[in-house]
Length: 68
Ligand SMILES: [Zn+2]
Image 1 (cartoon, rainbow, N blue to C red):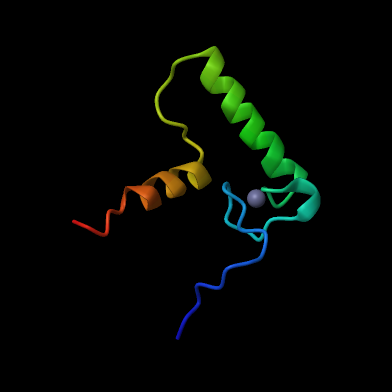
Image 2: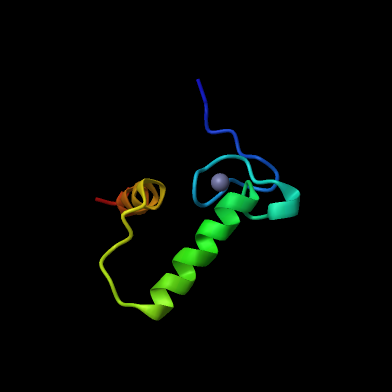
């Protein structure tokens, strides 16, 4: 049973929904704005890791190292 179906344009890096062509690589204007704000926020102030649940999930996901 494989649920890891890959969409043509990939998934939104913020919420993992299928990306929309007009907002690629994001799924919506909202996610695109959020990413931009996160990006700008990083440049303006050095803070801890983002408290955004979606970003946090992605961080945890990328932490999983299959070689360990
Ligand atoms: Zn999204």
